[in-house]
Length: 488
Image (tube, rainbow, N blue to C red; front, side, top):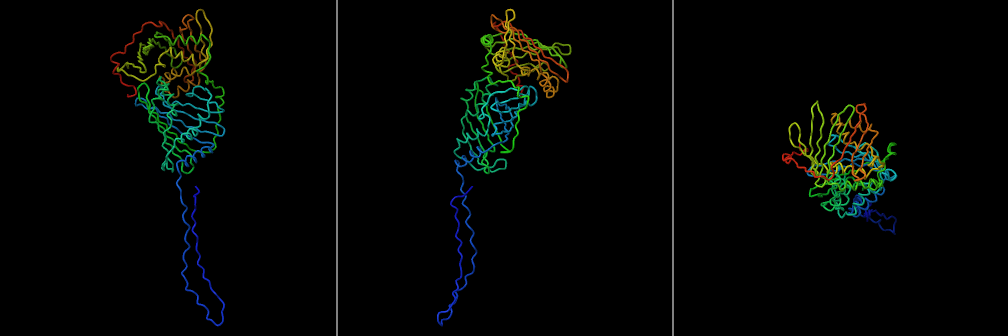
């Protein structure tokens, strides 16, 4: 900083003037008495002027504009029903070339391991290695990817600051009250998980607050913390975000992996133009109130086995029974799952204890899964007798749950699931649809992979029947006192 109106004291020097020479016969004049020499006074200290909030904001915006690269680490926590879910994100950004790399990680309870997703932004395209299973790409805007742009915009609401420290560094702290729509990305995630309306989450949001720590030395952001409370379907939810910045203007080499160049383009998934028969099938599925189905699943290889699923669903009431049957050590075993709205109940076979866990109706309703698959995937339609055959051009992601179950049963989730995903190939998904009703008659799925170096396959065949017939589904009385699985 350059202090204004620098006050400089004038140094007075006292000299001794000695007159010499004579006037006539006069005695020489006597010299005045000597004055002891005085020390030279020091110059006044420069006046330090504290910066105003507006000046700090302006300097910060200038510093951000002059930043070429940086690294960041973030942690997002979403708390629903008192249960927190955390996601960590770390990455680096090259603002000059508009490139970004990030890796997201969250704990997946079903797999009992961390699931990681890598993201690259290059040339206006975002490449995602989703759950380290398959590469997809979509269009993106740089303003949506550069966190410093968000930080700069947040400062527009700054009206005061205070001096503080963060992580041992002197900093200016701003407490901001931003527009709650800045949490929209988190609200979208919540709406997908809970099958809710993102607009409802935004409308019900309150207590939105952001704290930003700015370096007193460089005027660059050191840390940002954001929090907001909201509600969905009457249930309270909380979002907390923490981002820390480091290594400003250090060289960053961000190179897109070769395998990402063949990523599937999902930019226009929601508006994909499929044949008229597919559109009619989606409309027909939407109108179904109830159905029954039977699915046969067969696995070959090290985890060989067969299972049968008997399903009854009342879509209008969001109720579903799924009875899973298989053979174990020569004996028939079965488990019956009851899904009521967004909660699934099951009785543990040994202790006969009833357990429950949160789910989403859209993931349990098999017809809804098919409808969403048709909506977001390219479909080739052919005819066979009195039916249409939908050849769905999907990828191995559709077998993610099956891979997870096999890995879990193998007792080595991390190693097993990685091998299954890496070696998956020859994915086939076909849906036979009635020409008369445009409703699914049969769905077949298959995939080949490797487990412990040996070939393995998964094949599933699902037969649908009794559409819109009366279905009665009642939760057993004992299940009403079920213990929450997460509390065990």
